[in-house]
Structure formats: C-alpha cells, structure tokens
Image (cartoon, rainbow, N blue to C red; front, side, top):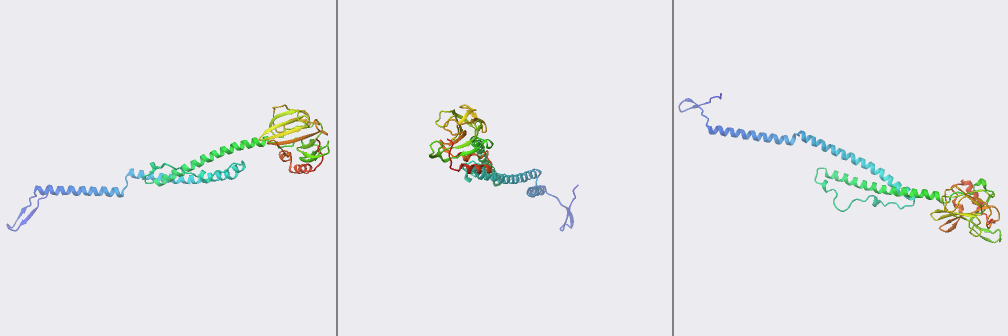
Length: 323
C-alpha cells in the first residue's frame, strides 16, 4: 500500500492530501523506463568494449595459436633454406664440377613468380602480411627444391654415364707384371728391328713367353679378331665406346671372336709372334677418335705408383722395337 502524502495549506491553516495526477504518473514511468534503457545500453556498451565473450576469447586464442604456428613455420623454413643452400653449394662446387656440368645460376635457383598477384585472396585480413610473406617463402622454397631435384637427377645420370665410362676405357696393363720378361719398347721414335731405320712406334711392346694370357683393358665389343691387317699378324681390336679402341697384335691364338662383348680383365688371347715380329711379345695400341695415343697414360687401374714410375722409365728409353 502506497503512502499518503500531505501538504500544509497556509490559507486554511490545515493539512491537505496531495493528489497525484495521472499525467504525472505516466511521465514519471516513461522517464524511469528511458533511464533504465539508457543504463542498460551503457552497460552493454561498456561490457562489449572491456569484457570479452566466450566466443571472442575462443577466436582470440585461435588467432594467437595461428600466429604461433606461422612463427614456427617460418623458423622451419629458415632451417630448410639453410640445408637447401648447403646442398646447392655442394651441387655447384663439387658434384657438377666433378662431372663437368655447368653450375646452375643463382638467379635461376632464387627466381620468384611474376605476372598476376598469386596472393590476392590472402589480402584484407589482420595478419595478411604475415600470411602472404610465409606463402611467398614457401613457394620460392618449393621452386628451389624442384630445381635442385632436377639437378640431382641430372647428376645421377652423369654419374651413371661416368661409371660406365670409367669401366669401358682402357685402364689396366694387358699383360700382368708377373708374366713379363721386360717392357721392350715404348711409344715414340724407335729403331726398326728389320730395317734399322729410326721411325715412330705407335704402341708398347710387352715381352712375354708364347701362350702368356692377354687381358682386355676395358669393357667393350670385339670388332676384329683376324690376321688381315699388314704387320699385326693375329690381332684383336676392341671398341670401348667414347671414341676409344684398343689393339692387341702378334697373338699366338684368340680366346674371343668378332662381336663378342668383353669385360675388363677377361682373357682375350695369348702372346705370340705372328706377323711382322722379331720375338714373342704383345704389341699394344690405343686409339682415341681414330688417332693413336700413348698407352702409358692408361695403366692407373693395375699398377702401383712405384710400378708405374718404373714402367715410365723403361718406356722412355729409345731402343729397338720388336715389330
């Protein structure tokens, strides 16, 4: 029950009851409601500005986690770039140099992407710069990996070809040292045993007993095993590829036939004295691109440094050849 209020009337010298008008009641009610609404609005405004909702807290945590993950991603890319840079340096300065391949230019390895803006969809966000830079680094890193992968594929092919090359070229002495009586004559000017005239000797003569095994000095295919070449008697020619051909002359007999494939170290024939020969020996020649070259440079696969030095001294003596 609401309280009744009175006021003192000085004219009548009595108390009169205060009558509240209906209009004033509505006015007071409206004022109260307006003040309440303003207070509520102010409260909500302050709460939105300074108090985070659970959803906002979750989004903020998600954003912080994303920034942390991008930071970790950039650190990982730093490490990947260091490792890749090291591989690239070895690729250019060791692998490609060894296999005589041109180094890959730095601008080709580090080239970016021109043309259209590849990162337009990532613009307009709070962390667009971070996201765009990370994506750019990742794209360049991926391109570097592709370039390096292709380079390593090329190196692998070159290595395979190099291995095949090293296996095929003549690289051992055609007669074992223990089977040799002596190295009779080397590559260069020598006295002809029949005419006594000084002329150029295009091979090396290895003196050995008749029937001493002769070994293929590299992988290849036998192109000739006959006695139809003047002066060589029974002889064998092996095509090693890469422009190399080895010739073995004055044989006693063959152990291979034409078109047969041979491996380095296979016995292909036996020492004899057929053709234009003064005594049992092996006359050995090497051709490179149809030009005769000194066989002395191709014994790294079977002789020690001391043996090679001794052979070099004997081969340099200008004496009489045996053919």
